[in-house]
Image (cartoon, rainbow, N blue to C red; front, side, top):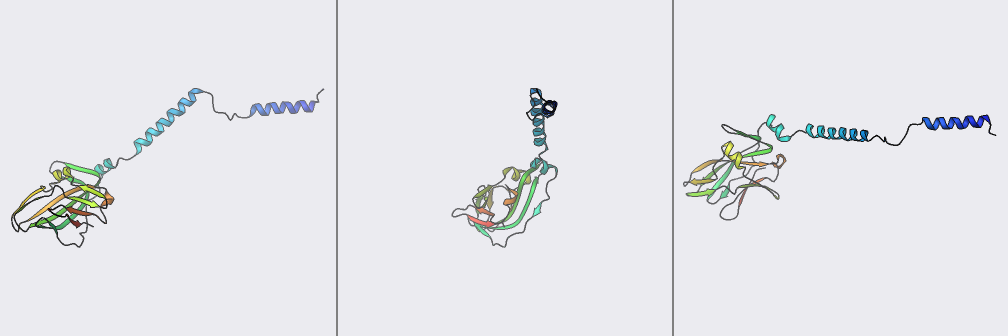
Length: 193
């Protein structure tokens, strides 16, 4: 025979075990579907809340910044001399009917080219270099912003002001950036920073 104390202890053990919360995941398949839907909605909201840098630049572009000119002398391009006269970094280039915006930066390079003799110069291969990176002319920005033609006819002693546009990452405008002028022989470089 069992004692009343032992029966009471066994009964308490059964009640205590039956009252414990389950540590196993719910077996309701509808609950898994609901959690999956909630996670999808959370991911969608995270994607939509990211700010598009280009959209931000269109709505609130940074103000154009005139950059300091380095203390360099003129460079040679064929029989002409090239002098750097201005540098401006901006996110937008504006023309008479259109504005072009980038999430990066446009660099407006202003030069004066003076011919030693009558000659035709091509600026179509002019580029910016920084280390192993090359940035070519931004032809769309050249058209919109009124950049200079890339083919120049110069009379002896004639000087022409030239405007070129390049698109490059904002942080590329810094130390080591140079304008490369391909000529008949070795290319000339004009340090920009």
